[in-house]
Image 1 (cartoon, rainbow, N blue to C red):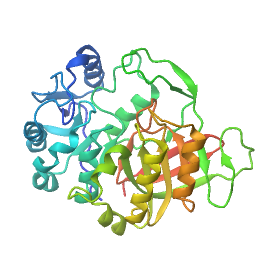
Image 2: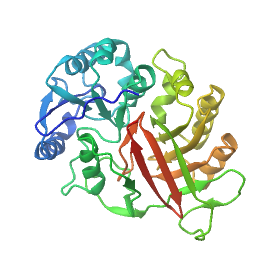
Image 3: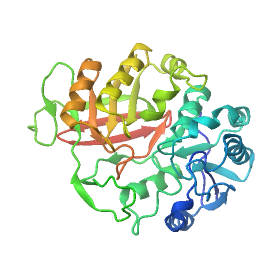
Length: 339
């Protein structure tokens, strides 16, 4: 696994909009950039970032702006401005030859999964999932945001599950209220029990180690079988894996079918655990999602409702790092080693 050089204080972050522009939330975006600058980063921003459109520009332009950051020697890390829906369009335009010869960290969350999953599985370059450039807009930075900043500088801290999460799913509501109780739910092969915060102290626990790979499963599902999917070679190269999957809006049945498809493709060979985040727009109860997953992967331990993905707070996960995940009584942790 190739780990790019981490930025240092005073390094430049290159920010582009490979999916949506941020024109509808300029004030919040500028608040986030101010937090990044106060943390020691300079900012190099491409032309389409502030456009107010679900596509910040046409696919070729978005690809060229990403490539400008890849080719710019002053840029130490490339961060996506925001998520969106059309990131997949730019993949044919990416300058992967330059990136392979001069690796840089690429960071993002949600739709930018398409780029990061491609880069890690095809080019064997580690990438960082869990935040966009606009993710630091809270009035007071939360621990998870501070953790992201530490990881951006190469401090591979151990991350622990949080106590509360924001249950709001209305994007028009800007106020953050941590009103939900964090409760990681663990399914272990060979037992009917779902282990969570109500379980006894002597209930089974999970300790799993393996190469980390994943992102937004809504995106990964669309990459399967394309030229931008290097899953099979990644699985072959790294015998032990931990998948982390951020389900944005898949129904329980769509998630079931996607997991079955990935299983049939051999992606879960050597998988020690699968970690699912909290679903942003689920159609069923947690119990029904878990029941579907138990049918699909009865022999693989998995965690449901982990601190991964769209629902905040969340972990920052390094695609390609060697991870150690623990889970017991509704809580969990993640350690990452760059080996």
